Image (tube, rainbow, N blue to C red; front, side, top):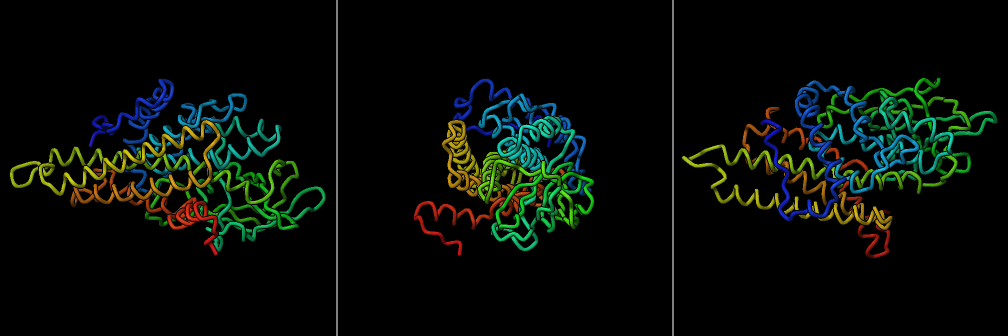
Length: 392
């Protein structure tokens, strides 16, 4: 179905809540997705290939670290604009949004927020243009939802640090120029280290044979006595608060991004239902089809309003990690349900590469797990409202 036919659903006139500048940013990203992503993404997904040429185009658009100050190469945008960028990128594909999300929230943000001025000037401008690609190393083979139990460690060897351990399920790992890696020091305190491609003892093998995020590169980060220069330690953060702050920013972007996937599935299903005829009338004329479409649009509208309010709180620096967690969980769930219902409306055509629905559905099966599983986010909300920790 031609991308030019896409009509962004806006049942409650949410557009009226955005500034002209925010809508201009969204429009630029939407046009780019139509031109550069939609025509190639199905083939990239089918072939399990990452469209690396898009990285520098994202940099030219200002979509990498858009809220990072211009001094360091960012666009200096607000949090609402960042959310809208993520929404439009994920309408194209989760792999493209994941790339921008990791680069922005999990790599550039910690360097900007927790790094030294020298680190900011060395890495951020190149990450902003896409000359450098970044990765974020927190999850380990045996430690996902419990990152505080990580076993990756580094020791102080006088002139340098020595890093040992491994990270798993890392977006961009095989091609990353710099990775923000979280590891424990000799006192067991979690610190952030900047690990560069080519350091002796550092490898990043790709994880293949995925059914989800096939247009994204996923891999491991393996450290075997890797010498890390002392100036590569993030000086302004200690403890789990560092990586969790990064995850809050990334989860915020996800809460917006998945709305784009949901919108694309809904719009595809609506157009198909109006065109496809059975029993001498469009399938949109049948009650059960209308029920599905009405429920999809309702959930999209609720997700839009939730994201907009969260964006407002983020702009005022008042959004809590628990509020972000709620939006991530809710919006991913509704997006996945919408993808499934949309596939039902398209019938057998819904599983083909001629339509984006199955691709979105498979991608969302990863999004509902990464950066906090659906169940973990429920427990975060439960902990926040009861003040009782049910994690263990």
